Image (cartoon, rainbow, N blue to C red; front, side):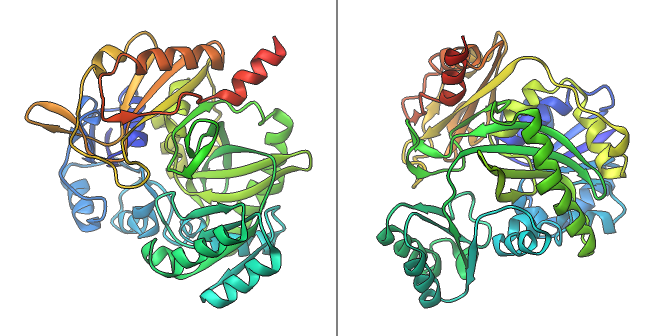
Length: 426
């Protein structure tokens, strides 16, 4: 089989690494890819936004499956364009991708189908949004409605912070994503990421993880795209998975089918878990980044077989097997992130770090004058497995310390919740 991966981040490197291990694979391409992905696939200089060029390339190279990594091409309709051209694709339609492309759409879906989530209001003008914020008080959550690269959400602990977040949305800080704002009730509990592979009719549970969104140790500082993750998430017990499928995922799949846009691809539910059970924070329509990295490290089965089943409507006949180990990934980011990252600094020692059950996935790298350099905010994902989260954590940070990159930084407490649980249960 010839496979084309769309994207250039750590998620796509992890997918390329896993797909490359499939005995079904004949040739793997990535558009545009990165220096790490180049070790697994032939890189193609096509932008994920150039849908016509992607269709033409897929025809020319007899691509059997296109795997769309990021959310923006799905929201923009790349899946539809490929399907219209008769090309098999792993990823949803533009109509289905509204689950991530519009937070307001998802909240309205939850209200219509009785899916547990935070109380909310939708606003297209600043005065009404601020009036709602003042009425509800803080803490409260302010979200840009559209795609904002993981940075359009403010968990405001004070009224002043909430009002400033509303202003930031409407003054263009998040571009078109902030033209509408969703203001939500603040939920308390423990967050978890839960994934399903979907084919329009069947949702197949596909593991859990816990992300670390804030930039600093102890979950301090601004939100980021994710500074690290581990899998599985202990809070997602078999009972909690069953409730999530029954109360959240099942009604979502039925609702999307009712609306004429059945969902296929990856359904990623960001959950808040409390004694009352699971509540939906938001949906994403692709693998999480960096959650994908830890899921791929733990997955026993051939990911290409599962993706084909999703694309062909055959998931009802599939199951998923996981390794017993835990997996943990640490994000190395460029100084300045999540603000303006410092690009161009040289990175050494990556090959030395990737050994003994450790993989280093490239997220924002480039080659310049023969050197590996930082080319983004989140730059490397140092990912390890272990019998426990504590063991995976120790291996990951030992590998981090073998990387010579003065221009980078990372959190030093990824996995702290699970490690504390392990110590308490020892």
